[in-house]
Amino acid sequence: MAARTRGVILVGHGGIPKECPQDLVTKLKRLEAQRRAAKLPPSVEELELDAKIRRWPRTAETDPYQAGLETVAAHLRAQLDGALFAVAYNEFCAPTLEESVETLIKQGATHITVTTTMFTPGGSHSEVEIPEILDQLRPQYPDVELRYAWPFDLELVANTLAEQVKRFS
Image (tube, rainbow, N blue to C red; front, top):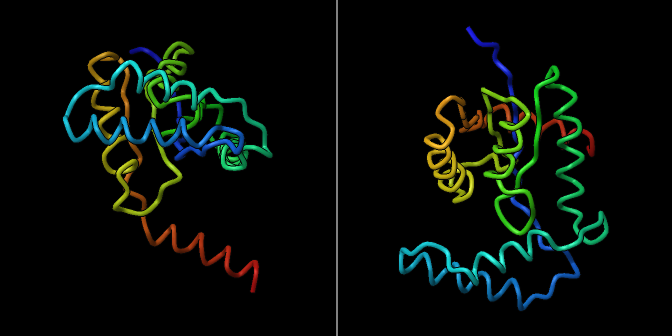
């Protein structure tokens, strides 16, 4: 039996860096809406805009969301007993979930668990997009187990939030 090599991917929403021109984001969102309404694949223009925004230069000052997620990721990584680890973003920031899965597989991961910072039900990223992406990836990587750690135990989420409130009470 082959050894299991565990990998974990933390998926965050992604933020728009402060210096990224708003017209690029507006155009991207318009193209996405048109594509979804028409049930078509992304156009070359949409893919290019998405890549441009995701690869926009960032610092902790220009993208505090990314800096915050990377800090959470560092703390999470330290608790994973040496599992391979990557971060991914749903939109506006790189890498994508697809890119992070590929990275971990190239590093030897055979069992990848994906989790997200989006805890509550009802979100399109956490309930629809992430599972759809994993469903699309599974046939490409038949020897890799791709799991999604969802849904969250909302009582545990509430306990974490209660601890946060106590820190400020």
